[in-house]
Image (cartoon, rainbow, N blue to C red; front, side, top):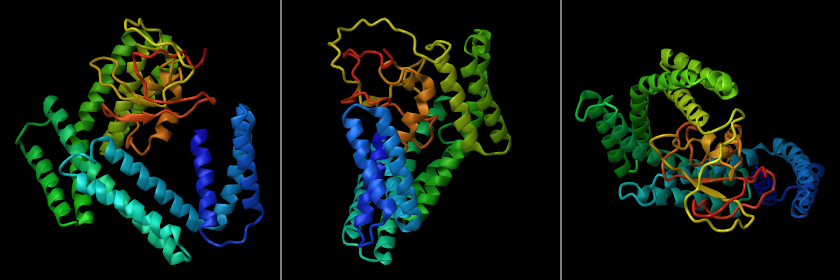
Length: 374
């Protein structure tokens, strides 16, 4: 989170220099507090660093409010880069059907950066934003097209969808139609067609996910988790209610999200203590000596039981040791995670520093890591 905050401030500074504006007091203060925050962080005074960073952000926001175009531009850049990363996360850059689309999305971002580097008026900034939005559209399209395949296979496996039935035919026709539009570089129609196919999948999967969520929560109650792990159980119960409400309202996407959250929360109950802290596991592999560094990246693992969820990942001792901090991982990986309750096997998640600890490399089960709360 601290790194994201610093990046935000650095980006703001760059945006300000992009146009010959009069440097005023808020900008000067934002810059000064930023420098103090970095200095404090480097000296290990993390609490003071956070306070300075907050002050810098406060003055930065005042500055942005006066020049809203910069705020829009920054948001469009972040959105484009997040969606590109999500697209890449499911193999969009190597898949034969989408690799060219991925390249075009990258080209749009590079074009936006090029326009911005010589921007001198509002029209240039508008064109920069348009290019970022073009990239975001292509990345979202690519992600949807590829996710259709994996979701369709899952629903067939669960006997919700039958290969060649009316629903399956409709979904495949929509996907093929989107690919045809893609071939003509008709991004708008390709995107809307792919999005409709995704909505059809949501409609089919939502009741299944809700039934699984109900069953999962009932089993948790049978094991007494409603008493021994009341906080997690109550949160799961609220999500189940939201899933039910959304399902009745035919808001299938939100219902699906809440149902998967129930399952993710229940999964953590068997591997965490009453406070959501991950319980110790027996290690059988030879481990290396702890180097003092925690993993900066974590690759999502799919298991038959206790499969990875953001809550479970956050609960790992070498991550945060507390499942309730899952949102911190989600916020840092919105480029890869469309829905916080849906993470995909093989996705590489960035783990931001929690309290100034050094994070480098990707998690390796063969390496030894201490508990972050030690």
